[in-house]
Length: 361
Ligand code: NAD
Ligand code: IPM
Ligand code: MN
Image (cartoon, rainbow, N blue to C red; front, side, top):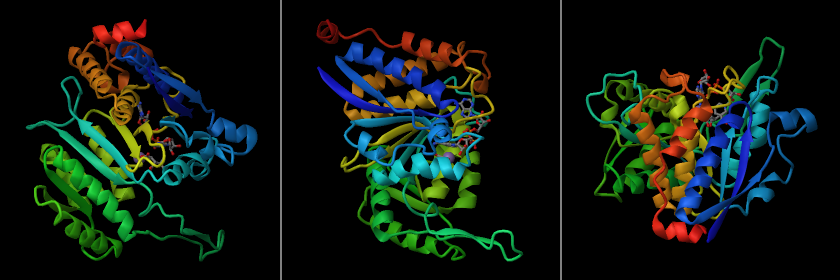
């Protein structure tokens, strides 16, 4: 029986509430599907920072480099400045493991309360550049406290960095709806964007079967609200992709529902799966966080591990519970707790296949 080694980092706030349901669902799927998951849990978090002065050990990445995947909850706590927690944990993992693709799908399935009047189905995926762009390490604050105080940040776009994420988006579109929208701001005000466009145009020529267009980020944001069904794959820079993925999640009812896969497509390093949302200090500790983003991220992890059947079973169970409609967390208009929703999903998993049953014995 295959055993997958998973590094689990619940992190902060509701990260600690939405990860246990994902593990429960994964275990149930393993029992049914004839595989198992061995979890190594890491307490890397703001609590650890407050106790020890570091979000993770200095050689933290070495501890998880050999795992088959990483499952993360959320990072951030009101007591610790965000730049400390994020540069101390989340960003080093994304960069250190060259997870340059951040895949953020959004599908409006029956039972998800979209705030929009949708005239066509919404099934899109944001492919977010995840290691460079606007999130560069070049910049800083100068002249603190003086009248000439300033903050500067350089956006860094490399030809190699744009090429690989754009190629990923076009390859992905080939397996889906066959269309890529590139998020840009090419009117020359932002110097990096004409370069981004140039690379997109060059790479697009190599994918004759895939249609594409570019949209200015401002107009694209409006079109996503007005006609979300018009989009298949949206590729964007780090910051554009960040904003678009929360907007797209809201189309499906809220950011609690959205999953993400931080991928190292070459599989030289482990990939990381995490909900799109953050640690939600406003609802942390109340047991009401929506575990959907986390459960859906677990399904993406199963796909990545090659357990396509188990992944589909989990997604179908989620969809069945949503469609039935009586169990929902408060963000989606219901009264269910995190655990109640997750338990309903586990209960909706299909019975084990006969082969898997005999394996499990
Ligand atoms: P957030 O996603 O934590 O919360 C935004 C709003 O959405 C809040 O009202 C919250 O209650 C709600 N929400 C989020 N997830 C939910 C869920 N699963 N169920 C129900 N409601 C949910 O974003 P924020 O408030 O901008 O950031 C809070 C902290 O999280 C900050 O420290 C930030 O840096 C961090 N953060 C971390 C990540 C990450 O680890 N990947 C992502 C985003 C934000
Ligand atoms: C996300 C988050 C992070 C990001 C923050 C917390 C650094 O918003 O995962 O979307 O911007 O990448
Ligand atoms: Mn974000």
